[in-house]
Amino acid sequence: MGLQEIAIGGIFISPLLVYALIGLIATLVVRSLLHWVVGHVALWYEAWFDISLFIILTAAATFLFTTVVANL
Image (cartoon, rainbow, N blue to C red; front, top):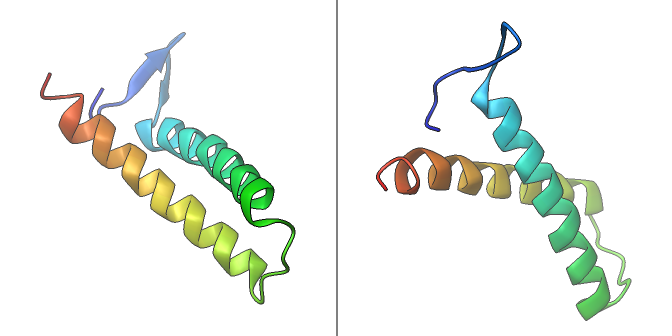
Protein backbone atom coordinates (compact mmCIF):
# COMPACT_ATOMS: atom_id res chain seq x y z
CA MET A 1 0.00 0.00 0.00
CA GLY A 2 2.80 2.43 0.83
CA LEU A 3 2.12 6.12 1.32
CA GLN A 4 0.06 6.62 -1.83
CA GLU A 5 -3.47 7.93 -1.64
CA ILE A 6 -6.30 5.42 -1.93
CA ALA A 7 -9.14 6.31 -4.31
CA ILE A 8 -12.56 5.23 -3.02
CA GLY A 9 -15.44 6.38 -5.18
CA GLY A 10 -13.49 9.33 -6.54
CA ILE A 11 -12.46 10.52 -3.07
CA PHE A 12 -8.81 10.29 -2.15
CA ILE A 13 -8.17 8.86 1.31
CA SER A 14 -4.85 9.41 3.05
CA PRO A 15 -3.15 6.15 4.01
CA LEU A 16 -2.27 7.67 7.39
CA LEU A 17 -5.99 7.65 8.19
CA VAL A 18 -6.03 3.90 7.60
CA TYR A 19 -2.88 3.47 9.69
CA ALA A 20 -4.39 5.57 12.48
CA LEU A 21 -7.50 3.37 12.50
CA ILE A 22 -5.31 0.27 12.68
CA GLY A 23 -3.35 1.90 15.51
CA LEU A 24 -6.58 2.76 17.36
CA ILE A 25 -7.91 -0.78 17.11
CA ALA A 26 -4.54 -2.21 18.17
CA THR A 27 -4.44 0.23 21.10
CA LEU A 28 -7.88 -0.87 22.27
CA VAL A 29 -6.87 -4.53 22.05
CA VAL A 30 -3.52 -4.06 23.84
CA ARG A 31 -5.11 -1.85 26.51
CA SER A 32 -7.81 -4.46 27.16
CA LEU A 33 -5.19 -7.21 27.38
CA LEU A 34 -3.14 -5.14 29.82
CA HIS A 35 -6.20 -4.58 32.02
CA TRP A 36 -6.93 -8.29 31.93
CA VAL A 37 -3.36 -9.39 32.69
CA VAL A 38 -2.23 -6.71 35.13
CA GLY A 39 -5.62 -5.84 36.56
CA HIS A 40 -7.22 -2.48 36.99
CA VAL A 41 -4.25 -0.90 38.69
CA ALA A 42 -4.58 2.84 38.39
CA LEU A 43 -1.80 4.36 36.37
CA TRP A 44 -0.56 7.75 37.47
CA TYR A 45 -0.84 9.23 34.02
CA GLU A 46 -3.30 6.97 32.27
CA ALA A 47 -4.09 9.42 29.46
CA TRP A 48 -0.39 9.83 28.64
CA PHE A 49 -0.01 6.06 28.54
CA ASP A 50 -2.96 5.68 26.18
CA ILE A 51 -1.71 8.38 23.82
CA SER A 52 1.82 6.98 23.87
CA LEU A 53 0.56 3.48 23.15
CA PHE A 54 -1.55 4.81 20.26
CA ILE A 55 1.41 6.68 18.75
CA ILE A 56 3.75 3.70 19.09
CA LEU A 57 1.27 1.27 17.52
CA THR A 58 0.35 3.70 14.72
CA ALA A 59 4.05 4.17 13.93
CA ALA A 60 4.53 0.39 13.96
CA ALA A 61 1.59 -0.10 11.57
CA THR A 62 2.95 2.61 9.28
CA PHE A 63 6.41 1.04 9.30
CA LEU A 64 5.07 -2.45 8.63
CA PHE A 65 2.81 -1.44 5.77
CA THR A 66 5.26 0.95 4.08
CA THR A 67 8.43 -1.16 4.28
CA VAL A 68 7.67 -4.80 4.91
CA VAL A 69 4.44 -5.25 2.93
CA ALA A 70 5.56 -2.93 0.11
CA ASN A 71 8.69 -5.04 -0.45
CA LEU A 72 6.82 -8.35 -0.79
